[in-house]
View 1: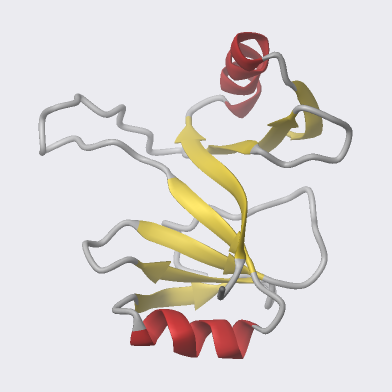
View 2: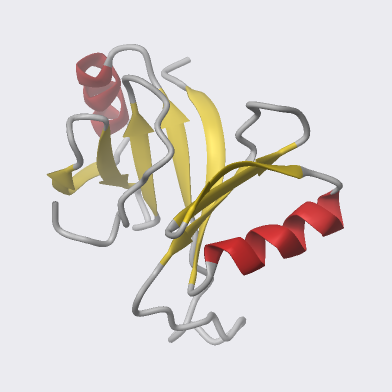
Length: 132
């Protein structure tokens, strides 16, 4: 095992509104809340789904391949350097940028972004599509 799934992150134009929708739908509660980043889970402190503001949000038009589904996975790791070597060996590629030394962004073998998250849990989270 390289890491543990920390949460699934959905980009959206209004994180609070979308988090409220999913919290009601799934019987979850808001556990982190800021203007650009909201996390919901089943119990205090749990981090199961996150919603991240995307200023240039273009909603998916599934199954239209020109506007595919948009989300990414955060994978919590203990050793970022060892995890990076392991995911690169599996076929991932590193994408530019790093945010305050707390996560590294990669693309899976077909191009879906994911982050290796390390260090302390924080409320704020940058957009993985931004150059950091």
